[in-house]
Every structure is written in structure tokens, then in C-alpha cells.
Amino acid sequence: MRFNGGGVDAGQGTPDGEGTRGRTYVCARCAGLGPTCCEMSPGQEEACFPVSDLERQRISDHLALSRGGFVEERNSRAFVTNLHRLFPRERRVVDALFPARGTHLRLSTDARGRCQFLAAAGCILPNEVRPYYCRLFPFWVVSGRLCVFAPAGCLAHREGRSVAGMLESLDVPAARLLDLHSRLRLAWGFPPEEGMAFVTPALARLHP
Image (cartoon, rainbow, N blue to C red):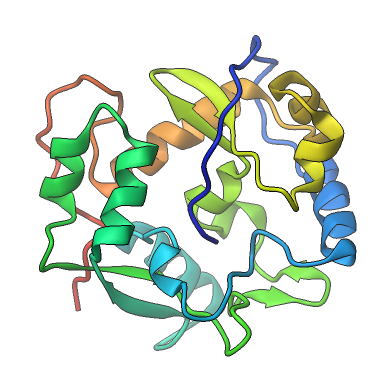
């Protein structure tokens, strides 16, 4: 659920589509070995990625939620710094979307730092309903190139060892990940591609 650092250059993409069987298998094994990317240390909730109104509504509609599941979090310095790392060439856009005195939504966590939507068998949300960041992880895109986060506990990273290896083990096409990243950018208020004119209002801020 938190932001992560580190990256590896990508190889070429594979055919369109979004496989889930490989990801489900690898992530289930990872969950059996210890804490997963769906958990964080209590007290570090500000490190959780933002959730846009679009993503919140999709989850709420699926679960018929009238309240709960999300928390309003202030745009702390640590949070904005993490966004600067995710979008290193778009710091001014980040600052405009997430101003210092503003707030954003994040996923709710329990007292142990586990995502509210995490159950014993994994995430209770179907893949297409989950936040874009969850669907992308452990992949990310910088300057149009696919890269990966390298958290120590990530089984996919330990076994795949490279972008190409992780794409294969998780059974996910590179082209689909690039498309998801573009959708995340739009949902969070960024232009669809780095370098494009910034005209989209912030969707990630809280709108009661």
C-alpha cells in the first residue's frame, strides 16, 4: 500500500490483455511468507498512495459501501516527497494537485496496518475494481518506460529478477501496464502522458 523506490529498465511489451492467474498465484505464495504490499507499519499511513474519486466510487459501487473503506489524509511533506519520486519530472504538477494544506483519500487500514480490503485469501476486490496503483504494483512507468519497485519482501521481484522475468511470472502484458499507468495518471489528475499540457483538475483530493 505504500510508495516504494527503486527501478529496473523494461524490455519489450507482450500482447494486450490483463492476465490475473499468474499474479494471483505469486501473490498468494508471497502472502504465506510474511507481510505483503497490502500492509504497512502502523503510524506510516501517510505513506499510502492516494485514491481518486473515480477509484473510490468504483469500489463503493461494487461493495455497496455507503461509508467506510477510505480515510481523508493530509498532504504531508513525506507524502508529497514520495509523489515527487514517482513523478520526478513533474514536481510542479504534483504540487498543484496536492497542495501543502490540502487532503487526499487513501485506503483505510486496521490497527495492524493491513488494508481493510485484505482477507486471508488476499484482496476481496476483483482485479478490475482495485485502485490502479494496486493493479500496477510492483511495476511503474517513468518517462514512458516500464520499471519495477524493488521491495525486499516482494516474491515476484525476488523470483523474476528483471522486468521481463516479472512480466512472465505474473502473466501480465507490458502494454496493459502502460495503459493502466495512463489511466492512473488521469484519475489522479495528471495529463495522460508526461510532458503534455497540465489542464486536468485534481481528482484525487477529497470531494464530500
